[in-house]
Length: 103
Image (tube, rainbow, N blue to C red):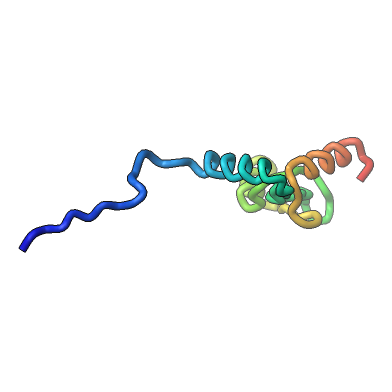
């Protein structure tokens, strides 16, 4: 009985990172004139102590950010999401307005 050699296709030539794949897909879509929606992966939040807002900010991971703030401000603070997820650029604009005091 002869052994058959199994050939995997396509041959493995090294891993492509997720960012390289995303970049390549984006280039192909742009070349074809397909509009690309920016990622809505950023949360806006208020850090609160009781009902009082201590600060406002943006993050892509609310749970992690809350734990970081609790290390600095104590366990009695919590993060409250403001609105829906948005683009990083939109969230930065919101954050600037919060710092200026013009909601």
